[in-house]
Amino acid sequence: MTGLGAEIAHRPRFTLTVGPVLPYWTRATLLDFYQELADSPAGAVVLGEQVCARRREMRIDDWLSLAAELRQAGKEVALATQVLVESEADLRAIRRIAEQRECVVEASDTSAVGVFAAAGLPFVLGPHINIYSAAALREHVRCGAMRWVAPAELPLASLPLINPPVNDAAAAAPPIATEVLAFGRLPLAYSARCFTARHHRLRKDSCEFRCAGDADSLLLSTTDGVPFLALNGIQTLSAARQCLIDEGAALRDAGVTRLRLSPTAHRFGEVIELFDQAMNHDADAAGARAAIEAMAWPGGLANGYATGRSGMDWSH
Image (cartoon, rainbow, N blue to C red; front, side):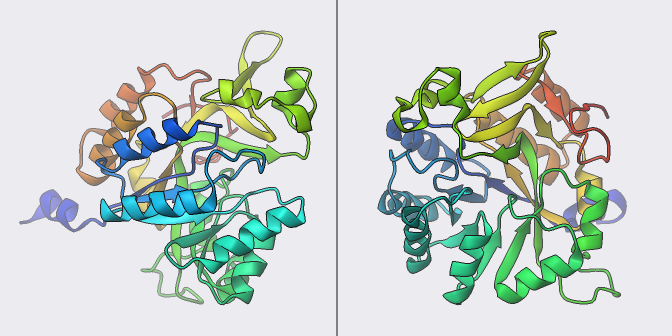
């Protein structure tokens, strides 16, 4: 095999990682979702409740049981911690995750980094930990980080400056795997206040779990009617979903080997298939991009941050 065919054959495949479900789905919905996911081309899955400690449809033992089923289906499974840690109960949940050895663990904030480092447990650096320099990344590697999910607002061009690709002979230290959010709403902020409860004129402690009515989060628009943000309990997300399905070359140049796809309530299986075909089987990337655009996602699509422009931009 010569020429382009040989290049494609030897091109490393991207691992498609399904990120944690961010909205509040019922237990039955979650189990159905992951049952369908077991037969998908996704190679890895991140489980766990990242957003709100009041959401208790699934306990840690339930997540571990689900993880065992997904591993039997050939998936690599990680268990993520909560992003905003506010109480001793939240810390106990992190310690409980650190005690298990069935799953890789993903640290969603620095308190989890401390717990995992103290336990001598290798971990994934989640996208909510602010890593913006090579020195910061090396410090976390010394603590036990084995993989890095880049913050969503970083341009792809910045990634090799922080984590030099393996073929960079001048790299100061061996790189760890780099993963980026390739599809999904951008996680922008967390707050101790529950904005979904406030929207419904309820207190956080008596929220009636109204967020369960927003399977893909609550879309907010400007006074001009332009979708702007999405609310998911204490989490604020972008209205637009980041989509990097036609950025394969730029992702490889940046040393990215793993693509995170954030679950949606509808048509997610199609998204996984399109990414797998475009990224790993040399299908027409422009056609895949058009197919995702045609799904008419509420809030639209964006690729501005990844390409070094305003975050809400969507252009080729």
